[in-house]
Image 1 (tube, rainbow, N blue to C red):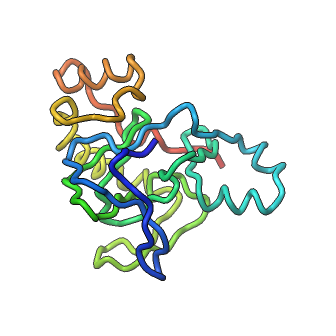
Image 2: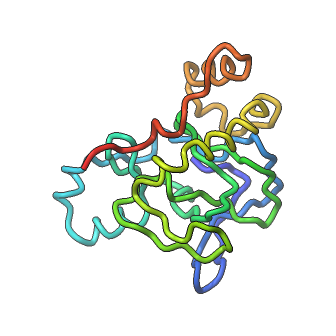
Length: 195
């Protein structure tokens, strides 16, 4: 589920639609949680689908570390890519704002950690990276982990409307990491190592 202070808006002809903040969302806020309404499809289920469904899943899903296709039931499926994303996925089935997101600003992800099947050319943002590759997690996980660590300790200090969707064992782990009792797991755990 995507953060409730968001809405779908038309961005422009090149981008299409995107998810935009309707209020300021501070760094350290959980912006998305995998929830019980999200659908998970195995590769064999995907293979048996007609092309019209495959095309939709290719557009609106990400793959988890098992190679399963995850289809968000809400606006989460419309979060656009940015090489300078303001949200990052964690190893705990939620995403976090890694910097303050202003009202009217898009929430963005780096598709490099979504286990894409084919390379994806992003819009030129003046960054060194121009293309997202299926194995980007292998090369950028340390950078993304560092960005997450910078704001992870802010989680309990922020208003967290999605907190009820984070299961208790995960929340306990989050607090133990913040208290220095555990190490934060790397986003690399999200990498699908299949063929």
